Amino acid sequence: MQLCECGCGNAAPIAKKTNRSRGWVAGQPVRYIRGHNARDFSWLAYLPGESNPAWRGDKAGYHAIHYRVRNERGLASEHACVDCGAAAAHWSFTGKTGYSTNVTAYDPRCNKCHITFDRKKGLCGCKEE
Image 1 (cartoon, rainbow, N blue to C red):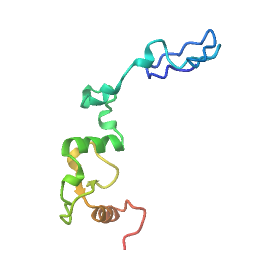
Image 2 (image 1 turned 30 degrees about the horizontal axis):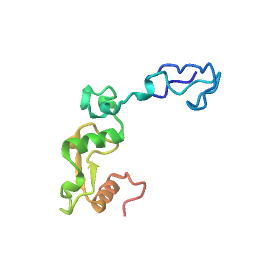
Image 3 (image 1 turned 120 degrees about the horizontal axis):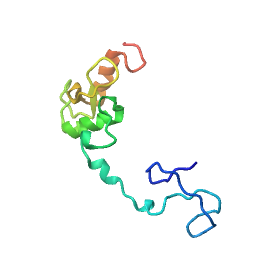
Image 4 (image 1 turned 180 degrees about the horizontal axis):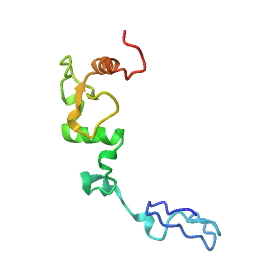
């Protein structure tokens, strides 16, 4: 069973006849349920936090957490590195391992200080020199 490509989760209907202009082949599933190809779900990306149906709360992944940090605290490049004062390049997790959903658990760091900080935590896969 092939699903409609609009993302609705419904089964795509089977084409009753071949229609080359639409890309249908008789007996094969069509790409969209009638009218679904015009759906625009881009507005979902603008629903903040828990009002977004894709919200995962504390189960959010790495990229979602960094997106939250960027949204609430701005770009790291707009801040000074907490270690040396140079222009920051990254948001660096201050905890021991992994990541946190707490946006205050991240500090702005330049590339050099971020690598040094991660080495001290043993996160870079190398031994401290």
